[in-house]
Image 1 (cartoon, helix red, strand yellow):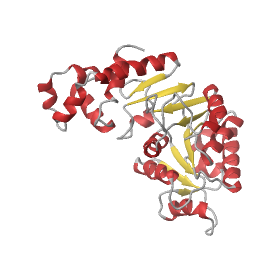
Image 2 (image 1 turned 90 degrees about the vertical axis):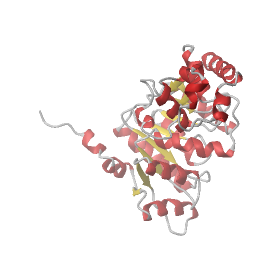
Image 3 (image 1 turned 60 degrees about the horizontal axis):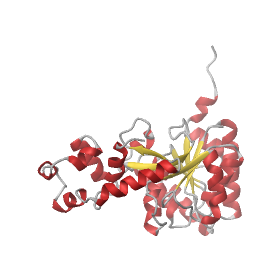
Length: 302
């Protein structure tokens, strides 16, 4: 880690500057350091940058907070991924609102050949848990290096992480808070295990609480990291449908397991299929064929 990372972290700590505006600043000025060192007159010439934003950029405490965050990352073995770095996940980089910077602790390959996001209701039924278990067990046979992404939440999320680990698949949890805590705390042991085979990822700095709006924001990373988002179970409304909608907006594949029309936890999945936002799958083989991964399982005769 170098001092340039202080400026990169600082860029994400400027009040009023989100990922899209931060990208605009990088395009205009070249790098994060220039955002802080450029003269006011030059900043004023950039469209979308007014006096209030310039005042926030020039605040002395921004880089001080960034310096503390860098020290926290160094102390805890946390890697920092910046949008313009070579190692930034390519799938995520393609997304228009991808985080300019995120923090990662673990050993997963975020550019793995095959990545899926598995999401669903926090009130998973026995059916949903069984479907998740069967899906990941069967996928692990053909794709032992498949990376499984989810959100470490109750229900389908934690079921996906635990079954990935059970089947020796790397798995990454995308968090809605900083890496100085685990939420919910009851999932701590699983999170620790994930650090050995997978990891934990967030675009929130340490000290950030798991506030409601953060879960919605983190869903774009869950969707953006993967080739496909699979919804196991979902009510008519919920975070997993938000993730599916985001993936759909990115032009990524979305798949859903259907359920009985009388089941509350299947209304969301059935709705995705009905609206042609999600392909219907019933097993791992369906997903493999839909993604055309079956072509990779066979080699041409020499």
